[in-house]
Length: 68
Image 1 (tube, one colour):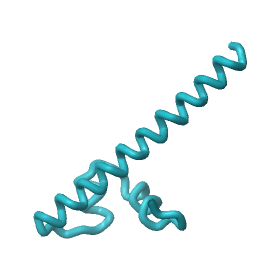
Image 2 (cartoon, rainbow, N blue to C red; image 1 turned 30 degrees about the horizontal axis):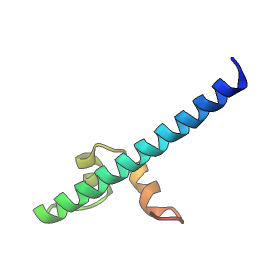
Image 3 (cartoon, rainbow, N blue to C red; image 1 turned 90 degrees about the horizontal axis):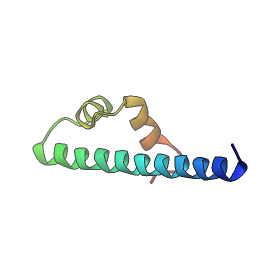
């Protein structure tokens, strides 16, 4: 494998990772909005279940020192 191919693969993988991260963030935000409108109980467990993400993901997302 030449270096250019490896470099382009790494660049593409990083791009895909960022896209997935953004999609997941938007999914969580939409879930929160939906739950608020419906008057549902909101906590890490219920949001994780509704958004189909892990509680640990939510903890990292909303308790990290650099919030979005």
